[in-house]
Length: 334
Image (cartoon, rainbow, N blue to C red; front, side, top):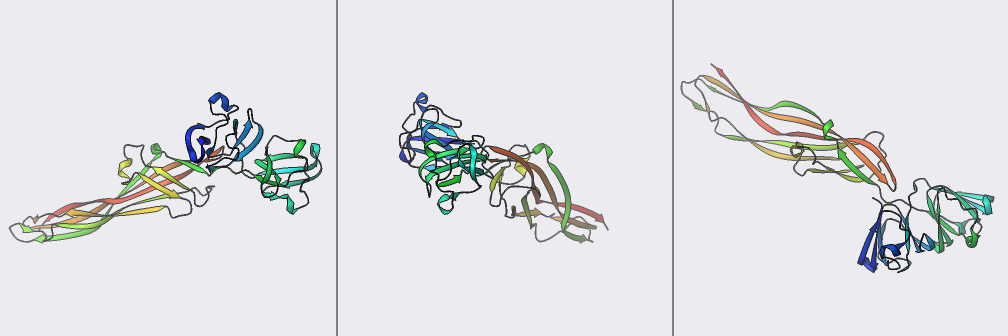
């Protein structure tokens, strides 16, 4: 979600309002010339001290601003909606895109080259850019956006000294388990076998130990697709609610995934198993301790949002349960 939250006083105090789309006139919303702090989530926003996106401007990328640059002097707000990946801008020496040109794809201090105070027009191929009057992000600014070529800088002519591309907010991932496509497989494994033989005509005690303790576990993991574009360190959480069977998967009903880590969690458990008390006469009694090992695989739809762009990938959540341990009795007359 891309949004801006504006506050009446510094340090996020006083009255507040939240916006998810452009606001051409804050007067109509009874919040004109009173914004003193703000928070931006997602794409950058541009604040203007005039209505209808006019006048001096300030740009805020994702983050918290306890004090705004134009204190109590913002009258309209506009969200930057361009794709901010792989930015590129071409600066031109003269008006109408003539003369020498300079193509940029990253933040640049023009003081360090031969194009300082030289640009008079520009074309933005990709992204959105902030243009500064002075080096080190100083002086007056203007915003350059894709598809909005400027053939003449007017008062800004030959005054551009620093330029940087705007960055989208941090990538967010919405993970949805597709329970209707869940696959399960079950196998039984004998992990112990205990035998007692009674040759007599009376019942005999099977064992002096009435119970045995065995180790079980629940192991969870997440597997990304081979073609994933999710960056290392990106985290998201799988909510294991949503199916009438999900409560059997784990105790917490949540699983955190981080790209680049092992993404495997194993929870050991101790399971106590009761053994039979007696062996009938003339009987060989075999007790097999059986672990039911169930593997559950659920496709996961990952909606990856960066700024105003979204794409979908798929991964898989695996849960291997080996915490169901029971006994099976087999009697044989002798």
